[in-house]
Structure formats: C-alpha cells, structure tokens
Length: 149
Image 1 (cartoon, one colour):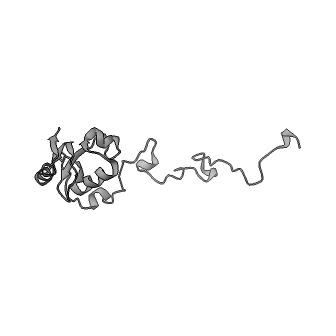
Image 2 (image 1 turned 90 degrees about the horizontal axis):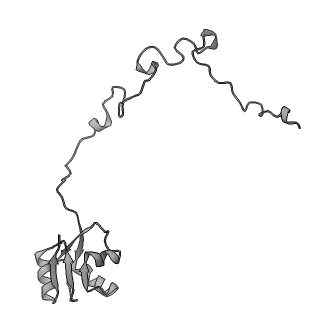
Image 3 (image 1 turned 90 degrees about the vertical axis):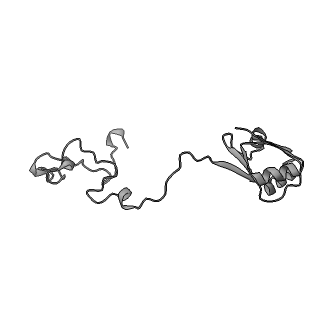
C-alpha cells in the first residue's frame, strides 16, 4: 500500500449537487426551489411562529387567568413543621439567616409562619410575615415574634 493509492471505499463519497448550473444538470431553472415567492429568493427568512397562513398555535390555544406582578411568594412554615424542626435541628431562633444556614430556604426566600399544628417548644422568630393564629400560639408557648422586611 502506498499513500498515493489511498482512496475512500466505493460508494462512500458522492458528487455535490450543482444547483442552477443549466438544464442539463437536471437541477437548472428554478434550482429545486419551486416557482416564485419568498422562499425561492435569496435572503429569505421565515418569521418566528409563522405557520404558512394557518392560524398560529399561540392564537389557537385559549388564554386562561393572569399573572399578578404584585404577588409576594412566601416559603411557608406551619407550627407543626416548626415543632419537628426544633426536634431535628435543635433550632430555637428562626431567623432568615439561621434557616438559610440549615438549608431550609434559599437566600432570597421570604418566610411566613402559619398556625396549622401545635407548637410545644419555646422559640423566637424573625420572619417576613406571620398569621394572627400563629403569633398567638408562639406567644402562648413562651416565644417571641419579630416581623422583618
């Protein structure tokens, strides 16, 4: 075997289609692009979501509801959950930094305490929001609540 005799296997390579190179090529005239219209011309680019005149999907599908841009999303903790966290982690101060350090919330989360369940442990809270029922239950258990913004 010599380097000058190397060539690809038979059938492995194909001749390139030479579009628009005369009628004898079999691809002359319109160069397989059909007759007239934007798609047959240079620089054609279809618009995003254009479906060739068919009603686009974003107009066919019904719209429901709305997104309230003023909504404040809270990470919610119920009193029952807090009791479990006190047992599991030994946390007595529920501040945003403390909850973040223990991996219970993300750094940007806002925390709200709700009154579902019972609180037996005494704990202090520095959270973004608290319900009236939860506040009463925390103070009854000997804890304190501070709302931070």
